[in-house]
Image 1 (tube, rainbow, N blue to C red):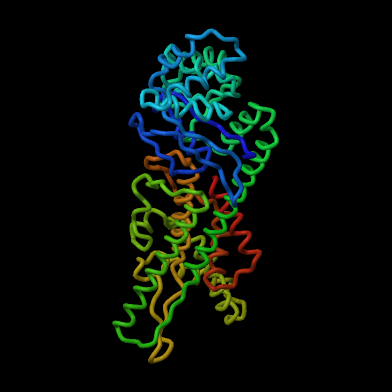
Image 2: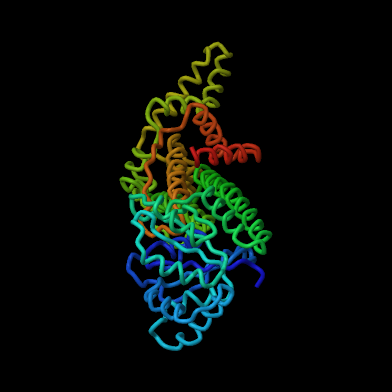
Length: 445
């Protein structure tokens, strides 16, 4: 084993499992408000492409710390002999059930794992914690204390006065809300616990930086690919009866929904989420993609629609100008914009009409509704931002406020231009990269 190992210990329900989940980027770690959820030590590794960067050991909370300390203090030994005394406790008491929790959390410590001691700094300090910290000090292992904040109160000052006497480092870290910077800051702290881990932890930090950068690029790429698919979607079928028309329309709508669902599944995968429940304020994403309600929530307002519809219809308007010999003073562009604006206000029944290619063949798509691209993009951004604002430790509902009309004029013009190209399948690689860049910026605006 050539990677650092850390054992996460402390009182029950102080955030140990949440910390393990956040640092291992694993949302399958069992987390609950019920004491005793973690029954035995469990190992979780941060592993990517077959390479393990570090291991975190989730442990039960102390149950009988005073009895353990009584055992240790029965024998007076020098400081250098204290680790052996801790090992003796395990050898003599771990066959029975009396100290089963203590044995589970002490075994990896005896094996040399670094100690991460978690406390809830939103609760006052009490001397019962000193018993646990004194036991951990017997190991002489590299150690750090983490100040978690489960509630709203803050007792950091009194905790700092005590923890500094027992641990080499003390850091604030809320696993429920910590982002990239907090993650990297904690990795830095862990690297200083033991000089032997320094090189390995540098690799970890390098990976974490790369992970966040590559993750965001992949997210922007998935969103861009999906919006290109929905805007250019076109289906055809033999036959022209009403039944065939309805079947084709139904498949077209279901394909649009499937594209969104597949996009969301890919986003989950990129973010390494398997057990997160995304729920948006006002349940916005629970409305069907093609519903009028979804259009009301995520669509652009009239004034912005008029602006982008003029842009989207510029090609059609240009034809009118050309026919008029260039003397319409761009009246064609205005007329074309008005037509586009009107179509953008239709319900989703008008999202794309059936076309008769011949007496025996019909076609549907691509989508004509100017607003649809912005509805799909806004839903994608909301879904993504919701997950970006949580961590793998979250087991509740993720709630995020969202305003789909926050696009500035420059973004609107650029997005409308690219949507038009996507719809006609005339985008270049440069267009795709530029669109991905805009999406990346919108993910963090």
